[in-house]
Image 1 (cartoon, rainbow, N blue to C red):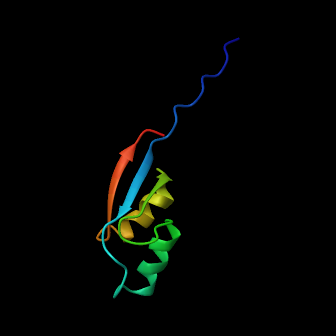
Image 2 (image 1 turned 90 degrees about the vertical axis):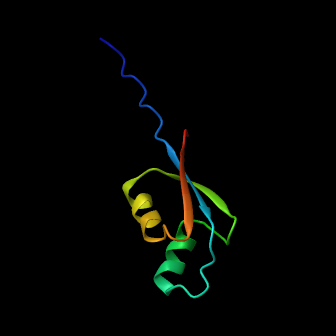
Length: 70
Protein backbone atom coordinates (compact mmCIF):
# COMPACT_ATOMS: atom_id res chain seq x y z
CA UNK A 1 0.00 0.00 0.00
CA UNK A 2 1.52 3.30 -1.04
CA UNK A 3 1.29 6.47 0.97
CA UNK A 4 -0.29 9.49 -0.68
CA UNK A 5 2.14 12.16 -1.80
CA UNK A 6 1.81 15.62 -0.38
CA UNK A 7 0.16 18.00 -2.79
CA UNK A 8 2.47 20.55 -4.34
CA UNK A 9 2.05 23.93 -2.64
CA UNK A 10 -0.06 26.29 -4.67
CA UNK A 11 1.67 29.38 -5.94
CA UNK A 12 0.76 32.67 -4.36
CA UNK A 13 0.02 35.96 -6.05
CA UNK A 14 2.01 38.99 -4.94
CA UNK A 15 -0.25 42.00 -5.42
CA UNK A 16 1.18 45.53 -5.16
CA UNK A 17 -1.05 48.59 -5.29
CA UNK A 18 0.39 51.11 -7.75
CA UNK A 19 -2.44 53.69 -7.91
CA UNK A 20 -4.77 55.29 -5.38
CA UNK A 21 -8.45 54.49 -5.07
CA UNK A 22 -9.35 58.20 -4.93
CA UNK A 23 -11.98 58.85 -7.59
CA UNK A 24 -12.73 55.14 -8.03
CA UNK A 25 -16.24 53.69 -7.58
CA UNK A 26 -17.10 52.25 -4.15
CA UNK A 27 -17.11 48.74 -5.63
CA UNK A 28 -13.45 49.09 -6.60
CA UNK A 29 -12.52 50.58 -3.19
CA UNK A 30 -14.14 47.65 -1.38
CA UNK A 31 -12.37 45.13 -3.62
CA UNK A 32 -8.95 46.73 -2.99
CA UNK A 33 -9.61 46.74 0.77
CA UNK A 34 -10.78 43.11 0.57
CA UNK A 35 -7.45 42.13 -0.94
CA UNK A 36 -5.76 43.67 2.11
CA UNK A 37 -4.16 46.60 0.29
CA UNK A 38 -3.89 49.82 2.28
CA UNK A 39 -2.58 52.34 -0.23
CA UNK A 40 -0.15 52.85 -3.10
CA UNK A 41 3.03 50.89 -2.50
CA UNK A 42 1.46 48.31 -0.18
CA UNK A 43 2.01 44.65 -1.05
CA UNK A 44 0.17 41.49 -0.02
CA UNK A 45 0.52 37.79 -0.81
CA UNK A 46 -2.77 36.04 -1.54
CA UNK A 47 -3.59 32.48 -2.54
CA UNK A 48 -3.83 31.76 -6.25
CA UNK A 49 -7.49 30.75 -6.17
CA UNK A 50 -10.31 31.62 -8.57
CA UNK A 51 -11.89 34.03 -6.07
CA UNK A 52 -8.69 36.04 -5.53
CA UNK A 53 -7.91 36.01 -9.26
CA UNK A 54 -11.38 37.43 -9.95
CA UNK A 55 -10.88 40.19 -7.37
CA UNK A 56 -7.49 41.06 -8.84
CA UNK A 57 -9.00 41.14 -12.33
CA UNK A 58 -11.53 43.77 -11.17
CA UNK A 59 -8.77 46.11 -9.97
CA UNK A 60 -6.04 45.24 -12.47
CA UNK A 61 -5.79 48.88 -13.52
CA UNK A 62 -4.69 49.78 -9.96
CA UNK A 63 -2.29 46.93 -9.11
CA UNK A 64 0.73 44.97 -10.30
CA UNK A 65 0.55 41.18 -9.98
CA UNK A 66 3.35 38.63 -9.84
CA UNK A 67 3.30 34.93 -9.12
CA UNK A 68 5.56 33.53 -6.41
CA UNK A 69 6.24 30.14 -4.89
CA UNK A 70 4.43 29.74 -1.59
